[in-house]
Amino acid sequence: MHNRRFTASGILALGLALLVVPMRGSLARPTFFTNQCASCHSNDTPTCNGCHHHIGTLSATADRPTYYPGDAVTVTLNGGTQTGWIRAILYNENHTELVRRTGPTHTGDDGQANPVVFPVSLQTTAPLQLGDHVWQASWFGNNDGSGHIENLANVTIRVVQDPAAIEDPPALLKTWGWLRSAFR
Image 1 (cartoon, rainbow, N blue to C red):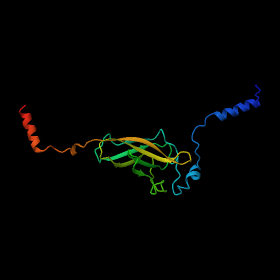
Image 2: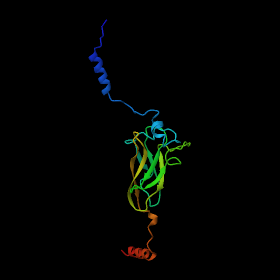
Image 3: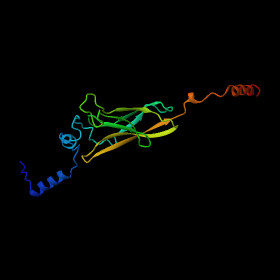
Image 4: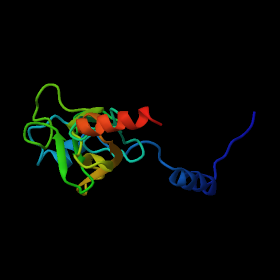
């Protein structure tokens, strides 16, 4: 039978090793929402997605590769590693808000059924100007109790010329073109 003895230096080394081992997982606590958020979100259902950081997991995708001026556009914002309501905003390239999805008072879910959650669809219309427009979809929340921030995900909205918008040439030009092609 072996005799195991722990020395003071061995116990101290074990204690120090435990201190330097990185902690895994979130430091969130069940009372975090109550202690940090409820003063402003008093009528909202406690949520994890309202506070957890989503950089790296946040993405925005458009429903089509191209649009004609004024077409309906749907941008889907994906992310979230937790559950609960979110506030989502879609901005154009000038950082002008195009659409916001959240609860009735624009701060949470207001205790309502069917809150806005990930993934969230944001609908608006394509710009009238042709070209690529880099918009940003935003998750708005609080990462660490120090205040609200926005995490943004870019999405490109490509607007192309609508063939139906190009006027037919006048009848005389059509006739001249036909005549010219007939005698080549």
